[in-house]
Image (cartoon, rainbow, N blue to C red; front, side):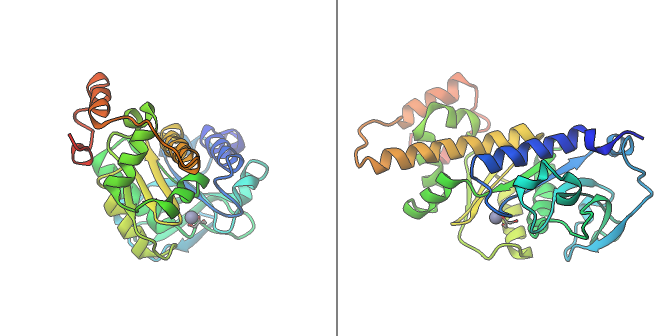
Length: 274
Ligand code: 2HA
Ligand code: ZN
């Protein structure tokens, strides 16, 4: 059996959480990540018959029975994952009943998965229907994205459009736009259901005045989506703070990007005024 601390998926979690912490996106215990793993890969590091303990999830994840995830822990700090992965992360398998998590590794201090597990697992189910390659769900509190939430309408079309206008890269990276949920209490099944519903349509979902969800086939894709939104939000806040904006990328120019990068099938045309 190989040493789990050398597993690429543990490395991915360490790198992502450390980067996110250092971007100041994930203060204290803010943010959470779940990453669906291949059983054969996990079996190189862990005895899959050895369940350390079982933890009820409080919701039905029947669509994910037998699936294995590495997940950040509730109350755990992103900044500490790098130095002590075995306390701050856990590897769980969804049990036969669909409502129990079997702990295979981690949370060695008796901890458990993130309070946002409903939003994560429900979003995994939603994304897998749209894209069977999806593996990562990532939640974060990026600073400028949140600052922008205070001064910009929380409307999917308007928010997406404003961010597209900020730099050419945005249309290339998220032509499918950003879903937006109003402010809601976090950590509940309700916000999980609402997030998953948006994830059927969007790879990015803003939680009004709280943060953002991103997803992807790997850590880089999910991180890159959130990072690009955050960069555009930073530009928006800086440009807006100057009190003077005289240039923008027009809708016809945004369409030129769509054509140049062959994004006709993924772009939210209804978010453009052509
Ligand atoms: O895990 O970010 O949304 C802490 C949070 C809750
Ligand atoms: Zn949060």
